[in-house]
Amino acid sequence: MPRFAPEPPARTGVAIDTAVVLINLGTPESPTAPALRRYLKEFLSDPRVVEIPKLLWWPILNGLILNLRPKQSAAKYAAVWQPEGSPLRFHSERQAKLLKGFLGARGHRLAVVSAMRYGQPALASVLDGLKADGVRRILLLPMYPQYAASTTATAIDAACRWLMKTRNQPEIRAIRDFHDHPGYIAALEQSVRQHWQRNGPLGDDGRLLISFHGLPKRSVDLGDPYFAECQTTGRLLAERLQLAPEQFLITFQSRFGKAQWLQPYTAPTLRAWGKQGVRRVDALCPGFVADCLETLEEIAIEGRAEFLHAGGKAYHYIPALNENEDWLHSLADLVEQHLAGWPTAAQTADDCHIQ
Image 1 (cartoon, rainbow, N blue to C red):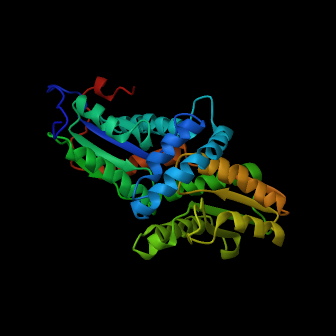
Image 2 (cartoon, one colour):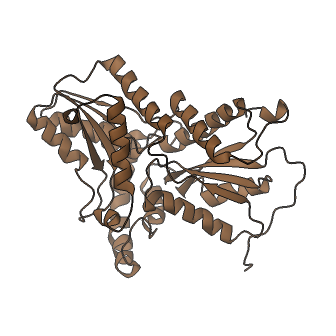
Image 3 (tube, rainbow, N blue to C red):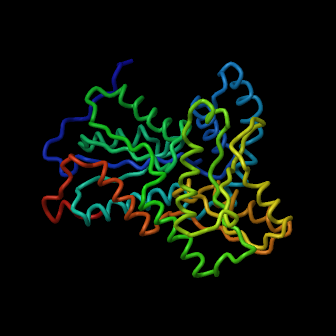
């Protein structure tokens, strides 16, 4: 077997030779147990995701988890699956298309595409396609505002593995995080304020729940900056919203296994608030810039049930930023900052055409 992948035919006069790749976590191809088994096997086999020695983890994964969890997860995915397919995938594709338009309006001639770390469209395949099209410069943008080794780092790992198999490598840049980017924080603020305009303010007996995906506490103890970056995002958002400390709480969801994860946990917080007489909760998930299973099923559906069953009266999920125009303009700002020095200026009207 050749050490390096075959090179595509050389191309001259390529109109677009710079690309931006928006990388998200991934999604199964369908809300079925077989599709979930394939997806979970790829996801949970990543040592960045599960930091347990392979000798111990492999029999647990293949003997227990992959025989029980796919059916349970498939039912949850089915509850949020749309006619267009996976919410994460179609929101990611729309974000890429709209971002290309916003950047084109600013005079940039770029390819902008979406890719998934697990599942399809696989990052390696997307990079293969860009290289075949003659792209020579690639900006990688993991769509995780807060850096974690199990998300951002594993996306960069996958890109590096692709580079290791590539003889004629393109120039690569990567964005590490944007947890405190002013435009991102402002877009979150606007989404909350627009929600309040439609549904009224929180009131004295209401709370804003700021829920981030969880992470094993051990990861933070070993040096992962995720917890600190989540706290910064939540604090900056609360300050812009002029919330008092008792009006909001930063929590962590999606705990898996018996190990201690980052706290406070989201679901127990909602139950406690319902029992304590909190009448209304508005929930948002700043760590997810596109709606997915963890927001639409875990927070919008399960979170609502937890709070109302415990005695709460009103529960609202504030959607992820998705195709929010303020957010996409801020994303364009972020991309422009990291494209500095690369020749991306459109030369003709045809070069700026938005596909």
